[in-house]
Length: 206
Image (cartoon, rainbow, N blue to C red):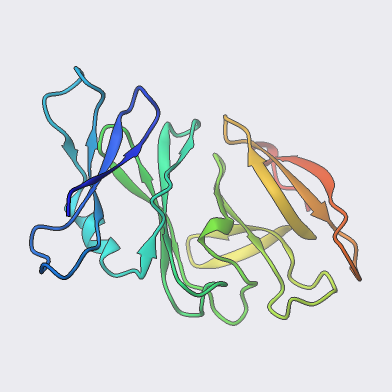
């Protein structure tokens, strides 16, 4: 199987996805292997770290759609799982991939029984820290555990905005988060989102 290439911003080139050299022929899975700079900027690709590719072997799958975040000048790669929401006790990791080939872990977490429902696509790597959107474990009509949460390194979280959070967008500087929020205590029917904007760099709204 030949390599596949995911386009980055024009000034950054591509990410090459390729099979690992030691994998048997029946294993078709490809891994992020290298950054391929634009033509004329380098003679060869920049290999991504081996520890990163080894980590990806232990997850069920990952998202090859790399999202660019200007405040870090980097791309996010999310590990994914076939179950949604994320099952309890299964570790999920998000990574920064930089145009120069560096890789950094953003967050690595497991969801226990006290957590709201959440998956990798719910996580927002802002300038001030990592946030995620959660839903009540019973998918109740009441507000329950719905809301925007701040994630902490010890696998704990704190809700900073209560409500059923809808589509969101993060400003290029990584500070302002805009999202739809239906914060009614009881929702019996379609959601009614109101636009809400918070500045995560100036403190969290309680």
